Length: 150
Image 1: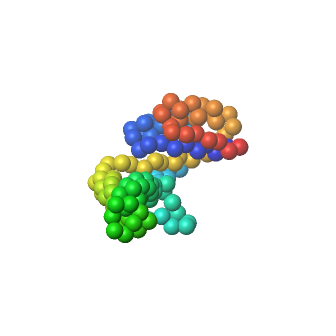
Image 2: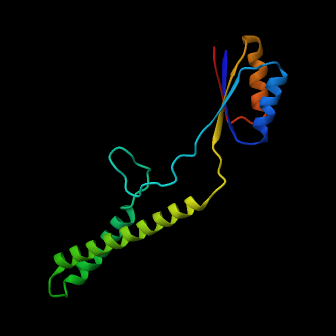
Image 3: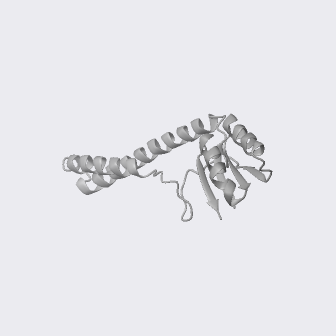
């Protein structure tokens, strides 16, 4: 039987391994996971999206400024259609720049946060009779998740 568990890297992980070794289990395999790249892409592609949109504020401000431009355009030389389009373009560019600035600032702030450790996966090979006790030890030592394969 194999039991898989994930832990945040802490003293609890060491305690779990020590308790399993005291139980007589010698086949314990620990794999640390990497944190991944620190640089993230600003623009989404067809194959990858992080769920952050740079267009939402731009679209909202485009509608807002186009309505204002069209209503003011009745009194201006070029008319409401041109001033509505000018207002929409200005609002979209302004909203896009605001979203881009906020996203770049969050990305820079996220890169400066250090000390975040990744998780560690533990694989324990044991007998069927020891499985229940091994799971109990892993849960007591605050495992993030535990799974087993018979």
